[in-house]
Image (cartoon, rainbow, N blue to C red; front, top):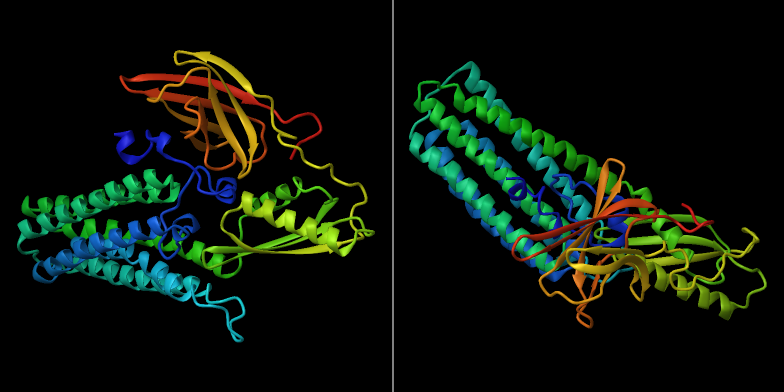
Amino acid sequence: MKEWFGFGRQDALSFETSAAHAGQQGSHGHTHGVIDPSLSSSERGVWAIKWSFAILAVTSILQLVVVFYTGSVALLADTIHNVGDAVTAVPLWIAFVLVRRKATASFNYGLGRVEDFAGLVIVFIILVSALIAGYEAIDRLIHPQPVTQLLAVAIAGIVGFIGNEAVAIFRIRVGREMNSTALIADGYHARTDGLTSLAVVLGAAGVWLGFPLADPIVGLLITLTIFGIVWQSAKAVIKRSLDGIQPEVTAEIRHAAEHVAGVRGVTDVKARWLGHKLRAEITVAVDNSLSVGAANEIAGNLKSELAAHIPPLSAATVIFDADGPGDAMPAAPAGHHAPEPFAFDCAFGAGTIAIVDTDLGERMRLSLTKPDSEIRAVVHIFRGSTTEILPLLRSKDDARIYESQSAPAEPHEFEANLELKAAGDRTATVPFHMSEPVGHHH
């Protein structure tokens, strides 16, 4: 049962970008009107969301027809809930049509903000719909009215469940193919929404058993659920539209500067989202005797490092501060601050787990002494009340190597478990600890 809701399938989850893993591990709020950057930057993700929209749209239309014929407020509330899930795709489509337009003299940064505006409109529409559903439910409690064609209401509830379950299976499957945490989490949310649709069936059963208030009571409970979603969505959309940013993103930008030779320190960092792309301004301290050419080389290296750490980053402005800190940061050789590798021996054989520097940035790497094509590996990093999850994918070049698709979050000092699974219910759990080298702490 836990696996069905996503609590036991942690091997399928990962973090799409290093910026995301730094600020979002451990939760994925159920919001509407906000599109995860990892999905909107992938054509495969857009394709998945479009088909999810189509499935939920058809489900909602079928339920709406039954609402008109039966007068069930529980089914009305569930229909509004499903419509809210479906229209999440609208700001993405709008963004992809408008964001691709080139910047103009009037819109120097393009039209990325239209995604935030669309999100606000969707949240408002869902809020108004929830108020209508709540009013109808309360009115039915005060002035009960008969609900007709109970079988049709129950069937519509089952249709809602099937629609949500179809979306759940589709999103989870594509999410695993893309290695997208956001899409997998949305799939499990759709699965949970399916239970809301089954509540409509319970309401119809209650009316059939002689308790006519069961329908408006269920409708009111679903309405309360929608209000919770509106609250989460509004906070996310408004924060984004007011240039809100996770502090971990700016911390990741500062961390990227540590890898660049010639940077003596970071004086200031600012970042904001424009649609689903990130823009940043970073002020760094350098030697004031540098030539223009040398300074430009540092800026180019810094931009490359930022792109490796934060894939959604579309542009970075580097400003030089010659009056900043005077002690130069040392050039960062590969693995300059990585913890010592952890060696282990388990049922699958011997190996090591380590944080390594690659061309794409830091990655968690599992090295086995002998290959096993059936192994699935995932690392669970325990950080207080949250758990960072890093699936390790087998290397195409070496079957003994498994590597994460994103960097582990800072700091690199933590307790963790390496979970290994294979066919035939073969499993192994390897607990390990990693510590920052002396003199390197965040």
